[in-house]
Image (cartoon, rainbow, N blue to C red; front, top):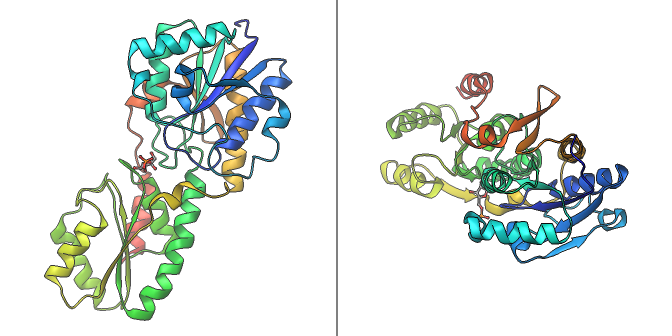
Length: 325
Ligand code: F6P
């Protein structure tokens, strides 16, 4: 057990729905365990610029249902250097802060790993990214909400696609990972999904479309942003050139996937991980990410969460294949 009296919390990298619920859980559980708690504004940038304020329980009232992050977020190059991290350390020391909770994705945890190695300040991470691409946890905060946003949008596109007998390529987020694409494809009954993890050759796609076109009038193809053909516009252009008879359209859902009120699932996940992070600091842990695996709370070293690649669920890949005939 380490003697922790005062902690800080920040959000960093791309925001995700449920980050506010996680901030609330960190603040309220810290106060519950008699710790002083600070909020750092704009991620690591705020840590370096000393944009740090004490938070009371009432400061996190009425935020559990809000998307975005009340602490705001940023990507910060200065924190990538030891000098930047030393400035941040100095600011925490001056305020007597002896523990840090960071909410974000792999970039956030990479910074946190170096910071915890170079200073005596323990750091615990909470996975917050819509991409769900962190190893060691079944879910990241924001993934479920983003998925529901995609499903709602694609259902609407399906109506117009079928009214016009159109072939739609719909691009969803997931820089290097196909988690949103695979699950949303199953949920909307897409005709196909193009994923970064599965090498689909262009010829294969063409054959599939030809076969599909004989018994279906409209089609939805979900394209993960990090997929190998260079995005929905590129692939649609190629298909249109080869098959001028297809009525092709593209829709890139973009940042709408990152916004909106978090789902009940994400709110509960965020609350659970927020409490878990504060307990981990009190119990003397550092350089770990709090996660949930098979519905059990787990602590995963940052170096594993960042380095190891989380695989897509093979059972879901099989289901998708079976259902897209
Ligand atoms: O990491 C989450 C994510 O939503 C990715 O899927 C996407 O590539 C990226 O953020 C875009 O982030 P931004 O526009 O903020 O740079």
